[in-house]
Image (tube, rainbow, N blue to C red; front, top):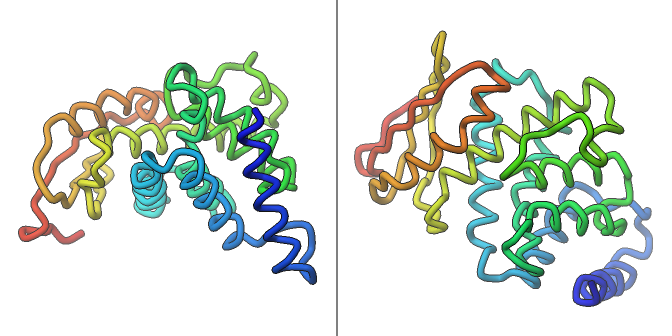
Amino acid sequence: MEYFMDVNKKTEKNNHSNNDSHSNHPTISEQLKMAKKWVKHLIPEHFEHCSQVSFLGTRLFDKLKALHHLGKKERYWLELAGFLHDIGWVDSQIQHHKTALKMIMENTELFPDPKNRIMVGLISRYHRKAFPKPEHKYFKELTVKEKDVVMKLAALIRLADGMDWEHISNTRDLSCQIKKDYLEITCNVKEKLNSEIDRAIQKAAYFLQVFDKKIKVFQVNEKNKKED
């Protein structure tokens, strides 16, 4: 993918000129900036959506710690995957989730650490279509614990993606209430859109499989914002 390689070369040149004293491993802050730049350069029409999925994914992560029991490293993987999940659109909509995985796995500059690369790549890959399977490439190489992390974060990114189905950043914030048999999500929105509720519920099928909870989604206008 020549276009992809050109972007890497441009980023590499900038990094060498500005960060000669840094190690080869960018900081988390630098990685986020690089990821945003990559998305904005390759698929500018998807930048707002990718930013929103990253935001919603991390909000869900923060609100649902009692369910997933994950930490800062896993949150960072989800945040980056949110930005990069649609990067494969640069090639085609068809199987763009698999293209995203391939592109992330090839980008050793953004992800010099192999573990970060594979985890972000897989979370991005599983934002749509097939659920993780034991025989899937890269996923089969993970430890049991790492597979559990990918499954949990894939469930969250799918839900976040569905909540921005119209690609207009309609949800400004959200709150969650964990019930015995279901998760209740209240979204503070600019306007009520049934399409995003329906899509979120549809994409929550994997959330049900991973966390054993159905979801209920409610929308309230910002002026009537519901407190946690």
